[in-house]
Length: 441
Image (cartoon, rainbow, N blue to C red):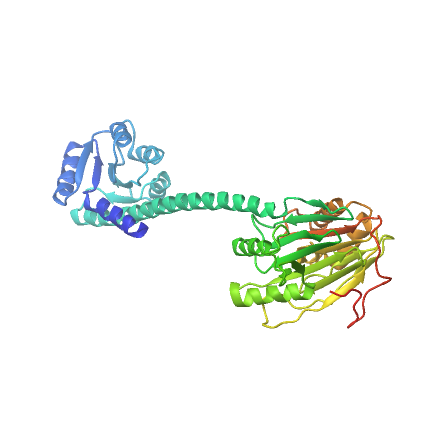
């Protein structure tokens, strides 16, 4: 559409006769040149002086100027120089009539802005050839102007579209942030702190928690593949499957024959999500997840790590333990199985789940922040509250990377088991060995 509009504009301009201004103090010379121009179909205006010609050029558009060099008052060279300073929208092709042939004088004319020269007396065939050269230049200039108008118009439309999209993304960001409206959630015996910082307007990370009953709390950290709107839409959909306010919609719950909803083991929850991604959603995406259930009666944290970074267990005495064996992401392989890890958690201990935007944050040295950088940060901020610890982690990322704009989404969850009486629990300790269960579902 834009190309056709440009072509039509150029054709319309070409269909109109060119306006030629002839400037010469010799009336006979002006009439002779003008007569030939009219015969060839040009629209001709005559001026006796350069000053009168300048006034005319200010008032109306002129395509081609044919001016004598030697004139009283203002010379053709001075007229050409002033003509170029008018700042006209359309280019004017300027031809100087002269009896001069020295190279220095020709150079002066070119320096003043002249496009071509004709030697007096003017030969008809040479004048026609010069005009055709001027016509070609004007045609190219008209096409260039038309293209520039199309570009400007297109840029204006693109800017409108960008502004509209940007407004939509800002609103989408606000909506996505509402997925974790409560950054600190107090469950009485446990406290959960959340952090979600997108690299763009919207992102593909999701963190959250929900209460199962008086003795159990679930925390999770999800990282959807890719970036931008598609990933954000997927996180919004996944959030709907992990809502704590509606067990009927929460994939972590199973409805029994009696109508009651019971929490599934973490590995069964992740397997459900794997089937959902492959059989129902069927998107060109996958995600990693760390899904954990804390049971205060048993003092056991049951965890599944599916392609997600290794969770960190920060003991009350400051020791930091790396949890999990890795596992494969969700939504890649049908029938995939996921292993459960069980670990004893004592009052005052805390668990950190985080996305790879933390450990894979690039540093100026070319290396990543890595687990070593994470552990150093945790050693410095381990005494802080969960929310302050997460903010301190972001601060360390900013300081070491040299920027507060990260290339990937950064998110995290801190689960604090508060130092208070949890009730009776089994006499278990440490991390379960393969095949061993500290807590039966």
